[in-house]
Image 1 (cartoon, protein in one colour):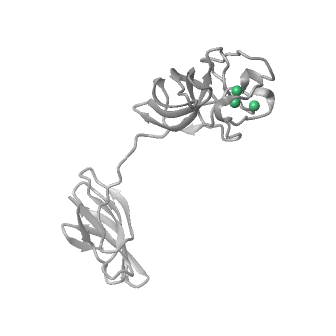
Image 2: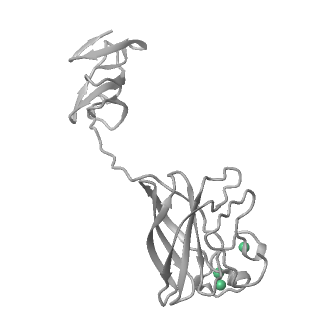
Image 3: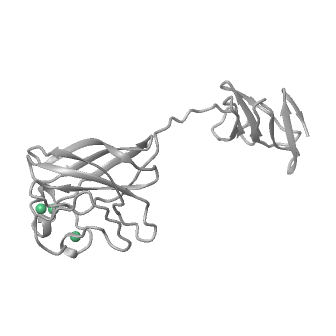
Length: 241
Ligand SMILES: [Ca+2]
Ligand SMILES: [Ca+2]
Ligand SMILES: [Ca+2]
C-alpha cells in the first residue's frame, strides 16, 4: 500500500510470486529504523526479526526480536511457505500462529514462540508485527525452518586428522576411510563399539571401506600395489578379494 494507516493484514495467506507480499510506501522492502519513529504508510511499522527457527515434530519454534515504539504491545504473526527460488522473496502461505509481545522502555523485546499449526522443515518462515492501532508491518526477511538440532559424535581416527564415514549398520558400526598410521595414505576403517580398526590394504598404500552389513562385514576397495586396486571383503577380521 502506498499510504494510509491502521491497515491491518492479519492471518492472511500472502503468497506473492514476484513482489514482497506487503510493501509499505510501494518502494520495495523498507529497512527498520531504531525506535520506529518514521511515518508513511502504516507508520512504516517495523517488522520483527526471526533470529532462529527450527521444526520439532512439525512444530516450528521461533526466537525473534522486535524493535519498535517503547512500552507498546504488538501482535506478531508467523507464516511459512516453500522458498520462491526465482525471487528469493519472503511470502506467507501458511499461518502458523500469533503472539502478543510488549516492548521495553528502549523499544526492544526478545521472545520465543511455538507455532500452533504444522510447518514442514525446509519451509521458509517470516513474520509481521501489528501495533495496537492495527498498523501491520512488511514481512520480515525469511529464514529457513531447520530440522531438529543434532549432536556430531566423532567415531575416532587412525591417528591423524582426516576421516570420512561412508556407511553404518543397524548396530551403529561405521566404515569409511581415515588417514592411516603413516599419516600419508588413507586406509579403510571399521568402527565397532567406538573402537577403530585399521583394515589395512592388500599390499598397496590405500584402501576405503564403502559399505557394511549388520554382521559387521565390510566391502570396499584396496590397493594390491600402488595404483592397482581390488574390491575387498572384510569378514571376522579376515580380508579377501
Ligand atoms: Ca516498502
Ligand atoms: Ca519503521
Ligand atoms: Ca514508524
